[in-house]
Length: 251
Image (cartoon, rainbow, N blue to C red):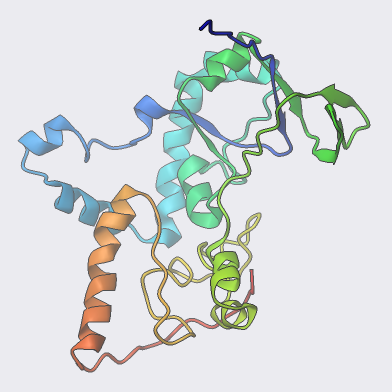
């Protein structure tokens, strides 16, 4: 049997600005490193240190980090912008991690695709969205039409609140309210200020319904406290809840 190889000419449609950061430099500290291990900093200690920074002041730490990144990788970002990529470092310059905490979307960790964009191997169409899908093409919001054999929708994650509506009911989802975000009054993270990630790893307005998510650090660290809260209730231990957050947004 013979094998056939098909060659695809890729085009990527981007409808919003987003920050980009190289994957090999994604950890802004040395907490998770071989040198940290040699110094006696275990993964648990590193997780605790990472979780110890209050969300209210975290942006002030992130802004200078991304200012340094912008200078260090200036050539890389200039090439991306020249290729048509709509870059930003967040509304206040606090970069990828704050976007992640505020809205859980709108950023890209580069693992190689950026160089393909710079080299022209992946073509970009920025600032538009798909208006209509035809049999062999897509029509964009600016009126242009692109031929297409294959469409891949890279739309990110579904909201936890949305999944609660699908799996349980819309009534329960509305009772719980929006999940994730800090109330920073930035795009997709409306105020008021919450102080914690909405409805994550803590009691919600719906009894016995808990939400767990996040990156590896958050999953390792906060799963311990989520498990303890559930276990305490199973054992009949008194678990009073002080100041449960109000629901300000449904999704």
